[in-house]
Image (cartoon, rainbow over all chains, first blue to last red; front, side):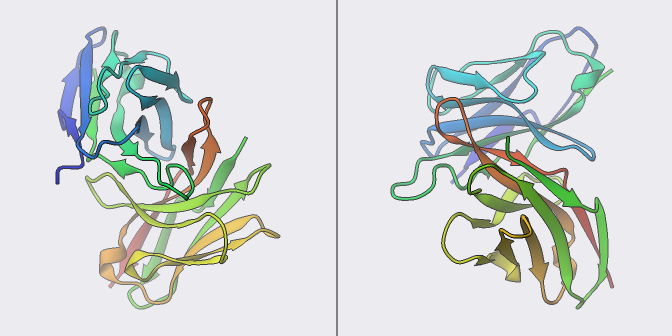
Length: 117
Length: 116
């Protein structure tokens, strides 16, 4: 059972380059999230999705774009990479549980470490 | 808006000693609270959660946390630290999104070091 898979694990970009961070889950989860983790700052939500075709901004969406064309995939796009986007990026997913609180457990991928130089 | 504050970015305890990681929350509604653990080079894993009911919550690996409304706290404890507990720990509170689903807002994390 693969869970949440993120690719690539590491990437170095030059300022102004673009790239897409891939995230896929095989658990048929409705909800997917992108977080960035910076030292001493915890995790900040970039974007999230509640299902195919439905996305919304999180706390720190500037400089990023997302799409959700399928239930499984939730790619994160950086159009013009900036040094401030150097971070570790985590994708996560969760599902609606009958009779209980929504989304009480997130399943995380292993992260993508991005450096923008 | 709901938020959590973790007191102490680094905590060191001796092997076999009590582990206490502090988390205080701010919420205008009854909160759902969580502790997640992150081992080196891995994603986060759920340790335990409080939603409703019993205020003392038991999680994996011998950890537990107590929801104290009067103190707006949700501190994480473990009676006896083990070397394998060395990791970063995140407290989180659940908040409603624009679509009505829950999103997690994380604290800044506490790195736990175990001294042999």
